[in-house]
Image (cartoon, rainbow, N blue to C red; front, side, top):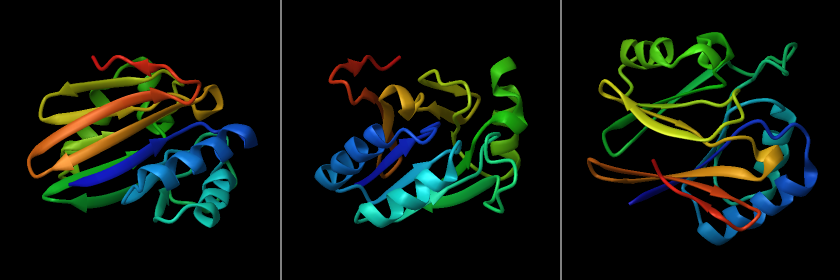
Length: 162
């Protein structure tokens, strides 16, 4: 089984980054995705966790040379990770879903809206962990063909899965 951590929109909130780094060490993730808005936070996280950190630039990383999208594969699943602003996710998820399908991905991870979300659009599972600056994070468990998305809050409560 593959265990992935998913965060976005950390916006230089050190307290939440430190709490999330503690969580990562405890959960023993295989990798963590940081979906933009402060790629410097992703670089900090790389130095403080024991797994790879894959990250993209967000709309607040305007002058960054960090890629705007990252693709990765685990157990036959292809993941497209973006911030979401370039796919206009605040106005609907169809463009993101189509983008994922065009790239052969069956999972699309995104941020930007600061709102947690898990859902399916066509053959693509879409996941937004919400904003880490508000304590929100996501986990994605991959067990063969089975995908188990989870949303959580570092403030202690679990967010019900849709």
